[in-house]
Image (cartoon, rainbow, N blue to C red):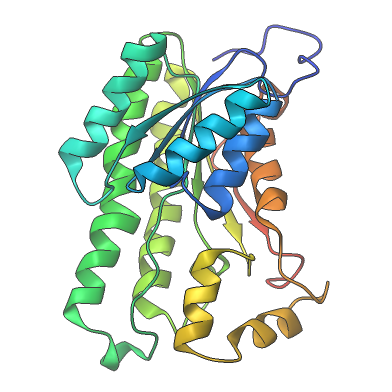
Length: 261
């Protein structure tokens, strides 16, 4: 997609069709609200259809345009069907926020990580994104390009002794992001990633339940002394998906308050 205007619209995502995966809660739900306020027509995808329905109603009540589509990142046919549904609804795809993920069920060191945890991490946090990205790119190429943002993690940037399978798959996602950015740039498709640090989401609450005190550790590790709010992470994704980031491609952007500095 070329940048052919001196000034981007006041709404960062005005007129864009944007798919958001993992949209039923946390960063994805915050992105749905924010992107709609910034002028996008959003398609929200997740396994939790009840939660998606409530979010769609909220966005529409606030004057936005939103639809929901069921998607299970662990099921490749489901992922491809969701992207096909975007084409049915809107005829094109301008942006994709590939945000869906699953947390590691049992925190612990490498040699205590179960085969089941590794398999689930691979199927959802890596292969699911690969499947989504290729389907999204095929649709974007039909209409001149677009932009993708993949949600990785601060845990992909360094040793991750508590969540080794999660960190490994997120690091693999970083590599995929960078390679896709090079592969697809000639087709007008930009691909970037973000690496949030601790963010006040349901996933953190689940980790706290499994490892009491982890929230205090995360807060203490941040120079800002706190976790991010989901909206703060979504703001960075919105900019990367917008025409104002027209020359940003293949970047892995930290959104961690300096915790990884």
